[in-house]
Amino acid sequence: MLQPTESASPTQPKPVKQAVNPSEPTWLIITTPHGKVVLQTPIDPMAAPINPDNTWGKMDPLAWNRAVWETQSAKPGYPSPGTSAIYGHKCHHHVCSFDELTKVRKGYLIKLVTLTGVLTYRADGSAQYPKEGEGTLSSKHSVHNELMLVTCAYERGDESLNNLVVTGSLVAATKR
Image 1 (cartoon, rainbow, N blue to C red):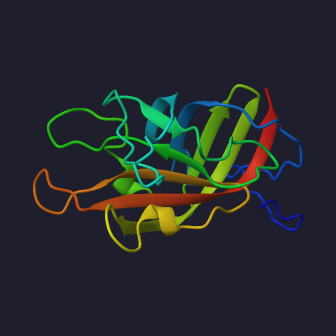
Image 2 (image 1 turned 60 degrees about the horizontal axis):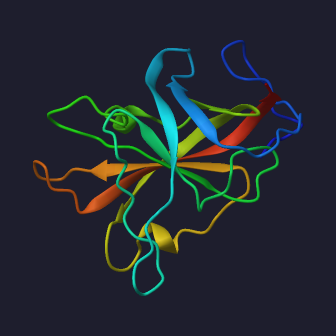
């Protein structure tokens, strides 16, 4: 959330209180606090499948080199009614959209370009959630003005029992 007392350095975004209509995200760029690009990828919309028990199914982006915005999550904008979720593949043998997500640390800047504006989030940190059973992502509460980036957390070779999740809080929003 934007705080009126936040200060901004030349490499940090200045808090902007400009309203940005919620809309579909199209591009994601993550940088260190000093401006070095860590990850960048285009984004496509994708609906999560619905399981027979009416829960959301596993998100599986169609392309390795493109992330997807889960259309059932909040549309990114300012103010936002809840968490916006973006999924991407992390691969060992291919170049994939979220290969470098494990390098993102608290304080990194996440720029999300949408059809109506540019939203900048500050990474709050990362956590792992099991893909099945108790404590999955479906147990995570939606938070106003939050961005959630999700990929596989590989433990053994090509096996992944958990999701790696990086969350970010909105620090700046400007209209396009």
